Image (cartoon, rainbow, N blue to C red):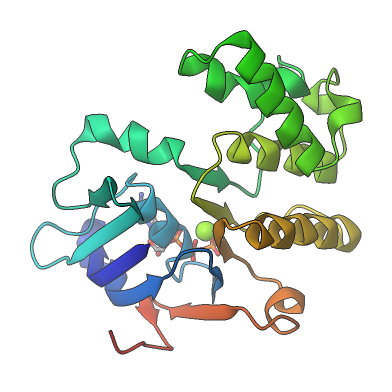
Length: 229
Ligand SMILES: Nc1ncnc2c1ncn2[C@@H]1O[C@H](COP(=O)(O)OP(=O)(O)OP(=O)(O)O)[C@@H](O)[C@H]1O
Ligand SMILES: [Mg+2]
């Protein structure tokens, strides 16, 4: 489903944020992405939703294979098709990124309104997403009145409203206390059990040491646990 082939990414001054990174993530897998600050975790996630592309000269290739008809190749996906890709990938960030001038329902509904979904569809999909994260009772609340854990649950609902094939999470529990972090992680496991692949960047050993999910370990832009592909 996600295939990195010898991916290198050089930012200014010749520093390689990613250096010959190769891995595969299969349909419905749950994979952790770990490594020190600056190791390249966010850079990997940004390559999957094609906010970044590998170096054009010997930078390798990223393939995102969603289904038979939806294969996105970093080498030939034009910018106008990237939106199509992003609608099928959910993304959750450390700092939630909710819109403070819209309530919970509207934050989740926005992605559907943008694509012109009918009102009845929007309502049923938003209610389904709110139920998934246990936030239905707060649908009229403004984000700034919610706790961090609640805000992240709304952000997860927003990421799930298009029924994505893949959920990417960049340190999603980094701003949460241990109880809320556990709860958010529990929701991720629930989402994965329903079939969505998850790639989760995290610094929290409590998650990856206590779960059998595969882990990609990055150090200075390189994968420490290289896989033979
Ligand atoms: N847009 C950019 N321009 C220049 N350098 C960048 C850019 N984005 C990332 N980098 C550099 O690439 C390297 C990898 O950064 P990245 O954000 O992927 O690390 P990370 O593993 O997500 O770290 P953290 O745990 O702190 O979030 C770092 O050295 C960073 O400074
Ligand atoms: Mg990061």
